[in-house]
Length: 342
Image (cartoon, rainbow, N blue to C red; front, side, top):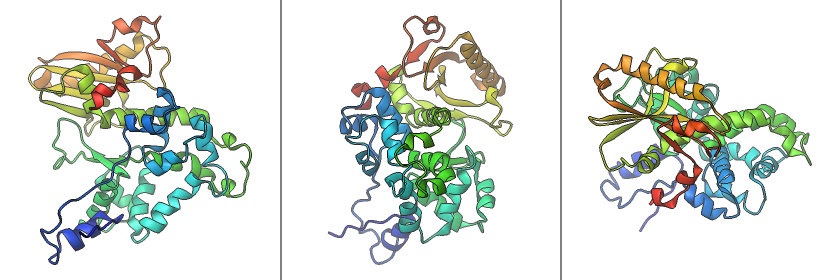
């Protein structure tokens, strides 16, 4: 038995799986995945649900990354120690990825750097930003980065993922998002030892919470199957994902929906995601209802569907009455319930 391992999927597939010498002889292809949320919790058993989610949203589930936090106490200070001192693990990891592993093709790094400057990018815009020559070469680069889990593509849930001209790409890897937001801008100061002994000073906590909120939205979108189980319709046919169209812009919050479900022939489930949580009022529900109305105006074929609103938050304050205004409230108690991950 011959086991081949590498960081460039298109090279491995082109040379060995699709090549003449070994064509049709490959018995198994294994794409190694990061730990899922319950696995992170079992790997770091001393952490509570909030810190497990902080870990997921900050660095993801790559086992080597999780090892850096094992036995290090509170998550955020541990990440700071491993990021903002000279030769710290997370300050050096970027070069290990794009110099040692993916250094043979400069476009890998160009794509990630282009995406780091925006929340998302269509293919043509991304190719232009990278100075790409077009054609299959750039497509291979995108496919490699997607298979490796560094970037992801998505389309509106009502469009075909393979043919839609509305395909967008964004950075999918949590560590890369953390690196570009918090390490890359101050890398020279880190190397100079400015934060030695007090690495927490390097982290902008307000910005950190903002990025965690955006990452939580992406995480919920990527794990829509978990929420369909919590809501009880995972056994029926449905579409799930974000909604946007050509008229949508990053600043047009009224017509961009981060996560919604269309259950065939019957119901629309509209999810509002709020992280890190805290109090909310009826204005939040009103904003969701405006999104609902905008969607129904633009998609006439769904006007006879019933609409259910769902709020996804870390916890629901016991004294808050908004529990009654949303049809359902999903908290970490449900998200971390092993029954929904089986």
